[in-house]
Image (cartoon, rainbow, N blue to C red; front, side):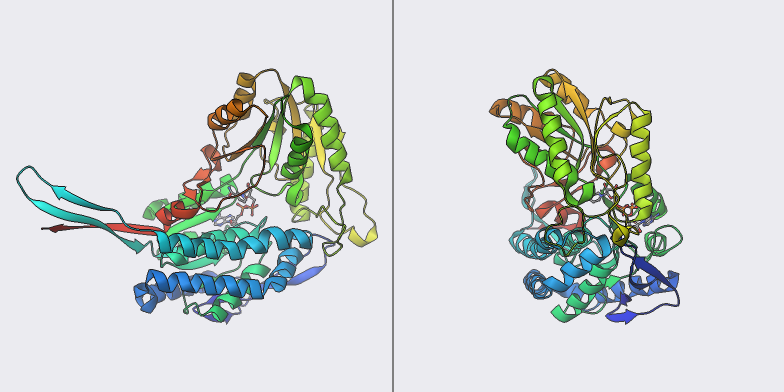
Amino acid sequence: MTNFVGGRFLETGRTFTKTSPVDGSVVGQVHEADATTVDEAVRAARAALDGPWGRSSVPERAALLRRIATRVEERFDDLVRAESADTGKPLHLARTLDVARAAANFRAFADTVAAHGMDSFLTELPDGRRALNYAYDKPLGVVAVIVPWNLPLLLLTWKVAPALACGNAVVVKPSEETPSSAALLAEIMAEAGVPDGVFNVVHGFGPGSAGEFLTTHPGIDGVTFTGESATGSAIMRAVAPRVRPVSFELGGKNAALVFADADLERTVDGLARSVFTNTGQVCLCTERVYVQRPVYDEVAAALAKRAAELRPGRPEDPDTTFGPLISTGHREKVRSYYDLAVREGARVLTGGGVPDLGEDLAGGAWIEPTLWTGLTNTDRVVREEIFGPAAALIPFDDEDEAVRLANDTEYGLAAAVWTSDLERAHRVAQRMRVGLSWVNTWFLRELRAPFGGAGLSGIGREGGTHSLHFYRQPTNVCVQL
Ligand code: NAD
């Protein structure tokens, strides 16, 4: 896999090996961008902004985004295979979630930008002077786009689509764990007619590699980043000397609140999805399940049964419902939390270890879906993001206690409220200190709605016109009449 700079596929002197989390086999060699390659990418982006792209119209860019979406759909199967090869996720998940959303992202932002107007004000001063004020939107400029490995193409296109819609040029740094779909997207961009230098890809790691070279480059005008909160903090420090704006989607430690009046079958179904989808590697996944005492045992038993029904296996096997973690390194982190939970006094309801899936999958990053009881909000496993298929079930007595427990976290990304009481549903959803509260559902996304987090979970909002706010720089023009 090569870098993509100024419309050219670039090899560098140094490569790293991407391996499969399914069985440890080699997926491919990736050309790591050095400081010179990153510099060339930033310069190519700047040159594109200084050329015809910088004068492109909104209808032209909306049409381009739609062409990209069509090309994504034409190369759908290639992208599904690439995404699954890197992450080990079941093919049907890559198909229905990751790649479908990539195409939808381009269409959604084509619509959003085409419908977006500008502010204007007629000024009438007491001395009789009158003026027309309007906000003329310019692109932010060269935008560094840094994304993680859990939903690689979905999260990458969620940023690239609005950035291009607003006329920016981007330098994308995909995760070192998931270079394949970004490499394919570069081909798609070229095929769709994206001008040279508007979309660039540099591969590599964070510190001492492409990530750091990009965020410390004086030529970037802003950073949009999705990943761990600690990395967000490091990127803030990197851009602080030049005071560049950031948009951050960071970690989560999301709560589900299950009230005794909930439809329990539907609730357990939703909980199983929210704890185990993508092997728990979605920022929105539930890691804390607060259950009202009268239904606690019933919910715990039903959820444990659902965990036991998950089928680990190869991504191409249609019976597979549960993939591996992204890497054996990440599995060590998750497993250390499994061990810590026991030391903190957890009762392991199900899972808790590494499964034996036979010699064929022995080199993979497999882990068991896991549920604990007996923990409290003071335990580290209930406070820190694990980013694996694991949750603690904790009982509560009344609504106020549930809200207090759910909000007792430094994170603030998402919450899910499960109840049949309409007034309680709205009341509790609004009291959650998060960017997104679901009621009787999970991961149902509206791409025009604001998406983001409070506290350690991020800065800013993405989605619809909220994304445009980051990727545009309004200039106020004041004309005396
Ligand atoms: P990560 O922070 O380790 O890496 C994310 C990206 O940043 C990668 O491309 C990595 O190479 C790069 N990077 C790492 N250090 C860097 C540095 N110092 N400078 C510049 N770039 C650097 O995150 P991850 O492990 O890839 O992803 C998992 C995390 O992402 C979890 O915390 C999860 O909650 C979060 N996440 C959040 C959202 C959201 O929308 N809020 C969505 C998905 C994932």
